[in-house]
Length: 256
Image (tube, rainbow, N blue to C red):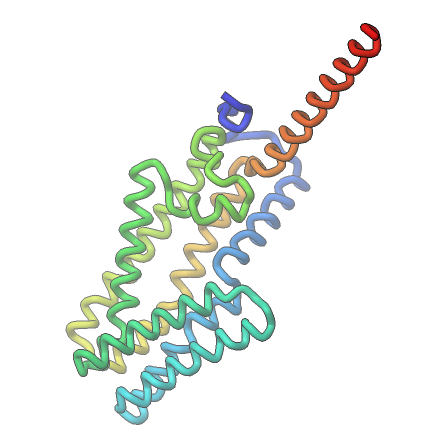
């Protein structure tokens, strides 16, 4: 068993100074910002749907609304490529809009533009809850690489695993509540009503889930930087081999 696999003591309630608490909150905030795209990521998530429902409300034309939404999604990707920024959030928006356009075009029902996103939200809610019940909370899988801890929290940092579980439950329940509002509207409301409610529910539930994640993780034990540990072990191994080589050289010199 290597040092990377060895469990560490439960650190649910470590004694930390105010400065350490502030640093933990800042690190957590930065990681969440990176993982979920921050303000720009939210804009890229909301803008295509907002444009679709606005144009459809005015013109009642599925084709024009769909083309406009897809065009703005592609434009957001191009802007990121030009600026050499990460494109994962913009690309996810393009795929979401593209699936929505295909569904709506296939059925001829403008409401089906929103259906893939709604099904994705439902699937994501089930994934958050299911992975947490299985002992591998999804938010930990998402944020582990961002914090450079990978999966070390599963066996070596029980307090942090508990925080990830709480955060994943929060995400799952919030997304389920969102689905409980949207799916009845899909059957009962018209396209514009569903669209405006869906757009209005894009940001508030997301911000609530991110805030709760920040609260849980800011109070949790700090992440274990497994990359730093691996580098330290590599340096120690190099030093050990160098020492062995030096001793072997001394023996050869002595024998000579």
